[in-house]
Image (tube, rainbow, N blue to C red):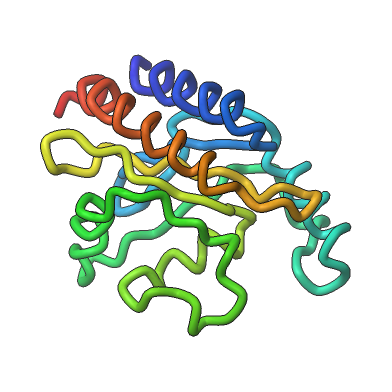
Length: 168
């Protein structure tokens, strides 16, 4: 229960600081990164993105409004370690073509396809505690470099408290 409270606090703080339509803090559970806490409405954020992008991007009839999830490939245990080392926010919303995606981060394309615009690792003692994901903005505005710096600072501040709540 404590994990949900800490994760929700982090998500609310990120949503407020960055005017994000939805934010979730994902933690590892049974080989998946799943939402432990969220702020905002992921379903509405994705529907508004679909309105902006036009037909073919999302099917709102199948969207239950759930935060994105991410399955970790058990053969690719390097991804959590890589995210731990990569201390910068990952602005997935800036990827237009697959060539734009750094090769080691290709697995994160699945998060981008579920409406996530930016992800940042929450780290403590060189271990991944969680992943904070922000929804893309429905008006097409990208998160600015200054906002990404603010998000990085929030991640640095929040990693230890999330790790402590997880018992790490």
